[in-house]
Image 1 (spheres, rainbow, N blue to C red):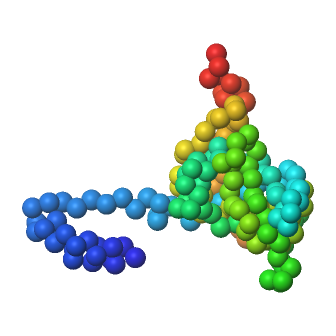
Image 2: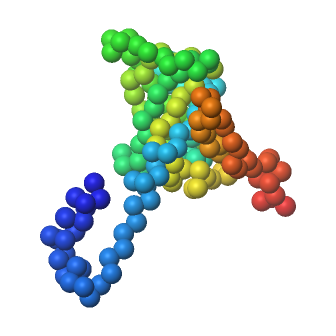
Image 3: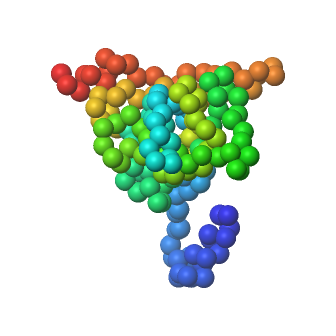
Length: 177
């Protein structure tokens, strides 16, 4: 918690709280990361050995920190079928999966040997905790257009989606002009 953090800071560096300094911290990730999810359909799957590989429409282009520091920056994943229904399996029915993005380098990997229900082409992966350090760091590597960003809210018992930002292919390709 924030108060636990302040307590540790006060005990480790008490002179910061003498009144001589103003302490400013930045908790952006802890405040906003849970507010976002990224949804991607599975483009293809293959089996190699005992591990199934699923390729998504997004990857290292949006999750740069995951690509370069996977042990420190990882995301929880949830599987849905092509109609948006949760794919539920007992623990014994789970299958090890590598979850890859569409880019042409070995670091385009969201997860390795993660246990998920058996995935198929057209299923949807929900990548949790993408409200920070994801779309704001988007890379147009290979001229990939950034994903659209939507807000959603409940209104009169229904979920309403509002487009916040959408890049065009033309805007992405302006780089090459």
